[in-house]
Image (cartoon, rainbow, N blue to C red; front, side, top):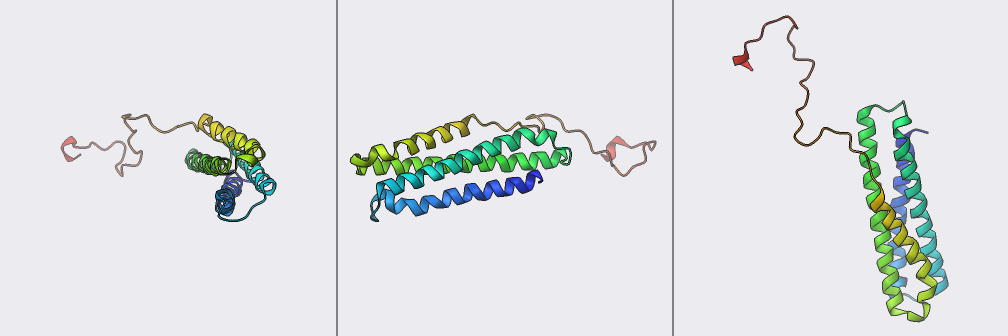
Length: 163
């Protein structure tokens, strides 16, 4: 499977995880009746999905150099998408952490049930901060090489005043 197709599936998994926040929010805030055990299980499932997605994004990012079917421009493009997906993982982890903290503040008797999920979301968010995507573009202020195709014959003298 190509890197781009794998990345598409990972992006959709992350998107689905983010959408789960809208499902769990009414229960976490108490606006809907809830069962703390079910809510804690839902949080753990989403945390596991985010953790797995981040692991696969890391593996994909590390393997891009070995993929001989991708050109340099494609690798830069895929790395940009990977960086965006990692940012989405971080946002999702932060959203769920906030939901859990609110839930724990409103339901101190059930706080112990959601604590493992909170710890897992915090670990995932921390791991996203440690994730690095190599930047292979030209350095800031570097002079770019001129284009090879000027439209002129290589032996033709060019008047510098016309440039």
